[in-house]
Length: 265
Ligand SMILES: Nc1ncnc2c1ncn2[C@@H]1O[C@H](COP(=O)(O)OP(=O)(O)OP(=O)(O)O)[C@@H](O)[C@H]1O
Image (cartoon, rainbow, N blue to C red):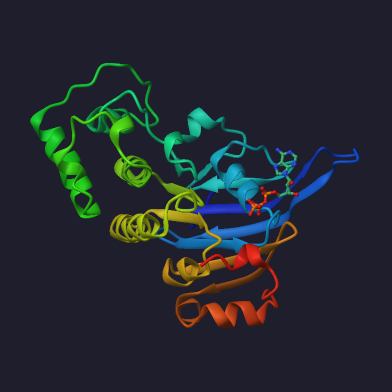
């Protein structure tokens, strides 16, 4: 057991894909990142900067070549994805990835309640549990609390993504990773899901890493921001400095005005 005060620490993490081949890619080059409990950190950077690889290392999808990932007091560097479910919840870009289409809204939420435990296909949907689900869904403002028995395949992409978010937060994971989870949604729905994200993360104070290419979301969300480039963190802002950032200042500061990937509004 490693003693640490942080909620999530990524320490000197390196990752090279296809080493010593013509397709070698240095995705992460000595990443150090320490988040306190409740930190909501936005991750931005150009295409290929290493953002998804960083989140994959935290979520256990990718093993670092060297370095450590520590959550609370537990070193989870070598923990497989299924064991990390007790620690890390994730929402992907594709709304269909976080929910089971053939199950109802309440069945999906019941599965989410079993995060990190051995899952069975038995759901005990008590009145108390349905009330808890309805209370979790109600702040989304999408009316899902009245559709607990609706098959998820009947929901829109935005509704499914909002449900994925609530499912990810339901058991209060120690860390939440959001990988461009609004990128596949139409602009209006993306705004609704982002508002739900801010509400869910800030209310529950879940330590969160969120990738976005939307600079306005990067400005509006979270108390910390990191910018990655070529596998390194090249800029960090937190607290008041983060609150004072503007889209223009970010673009100007990093001479990114010609990088369209960073300018999706
Ligand atoms: N599984 C993989 N196999 C080989 N190379 C990979 C793999 N995953 C990522 N890479 C490479 O590692 C580098 C970092 O990729 P990563 O997906 O982490 O970047 P990103 O910042 O998330 O980019 P984007 O914004 O385009 O999604 C890139 O050069 C990418 O091509």
